[in-house]
Image (cartoon, rainbow, N blue to C red):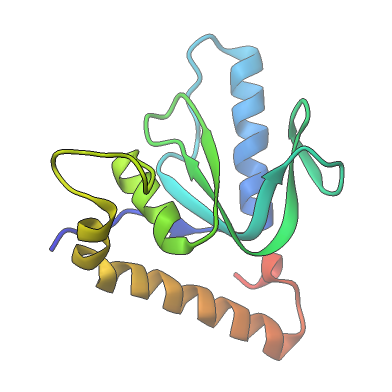
Length: 145
């Protein structure tokens, strides 16, 4: 069984990624991002509304429970971002580059989900612990780490 390479992050960490990407893009033709890999920000979504902190031009991150924003900076030069309605879908996109409806001769979403169920469950457990920690201390999820 292969191990998935995805990390759950909080709002301040996501903001650092976005600032780093914007600065690198502005100051360097070939950016070198400090944080490379696959990351998921729970309880937020990408939107065009002005209700949260700005990402680039007219894109914003806003609070939206049961939503996940996946960040892919694995190549170290580009930061891809995408909304998902489930943690499993976000991990699938980060690991394969495919969406649920995409067809691939190697595997389908259903096959991948069955094969990586244990690893995704570990991420779900981590998320649950973060939320419980936040509720016990009455602090926002952003400061739970």
